[in-house]
Length: 235
Image 1: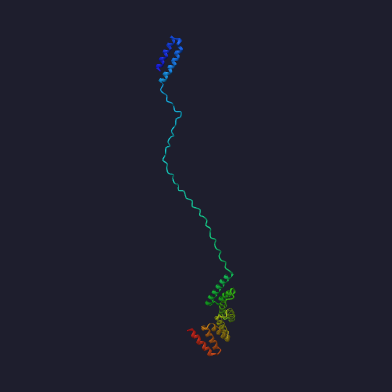
Image 2 (image 1 turned 45 degrees about the vertical axis):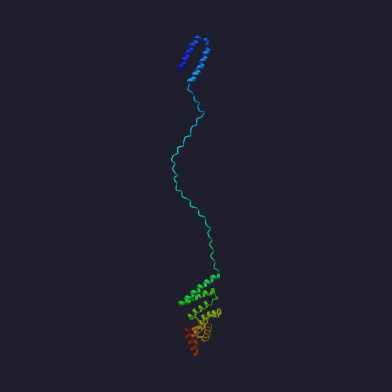
């Protein structure tokens, strides 16, 4: 800047001495000044039109692993299984119900008879007969219970029915013969004992009861023969 001022002073002095040359000096000074300023000014570097600001690095912070929260795993909804349709219970037919009632009544009647409760036994045999009037066994057992009570007429009626249902029922013949004999109808008793023996030749009781009936009637030879046969079968 000192040199610039010196030049200005020199130029000013020159202007005073030579006014006519002022215009040329001024142009010269201006050009010179520009040269000086150009030489003394530091070289200006072209500024970049745009400054690329570096993208700041992202600081990687220590990331913690996500805490595994204990989440309850939902239980799978059970698939509804098709329930097996229960099979309908077989409906008991009237016949099956009748058979069950007969069996129960008949069995109970037999138990009561063997216990000596003949009246209760008769009630159960009657119930069995009502359900199954075609049972020779029920009639026969009820007849025996009547006979045990001394009701011989009723007993004979039941034995008649049993024989009608089953003509080969040797026990019915035997018990009817005994009822006749107890009623002092010995001839009829002997006839029934004979039919029982015919169906069942091994029936020692039939031989024995027939022998007794023969003996009461005074037929001792026949009585002795039947007693011998009864003893033989009983051995």
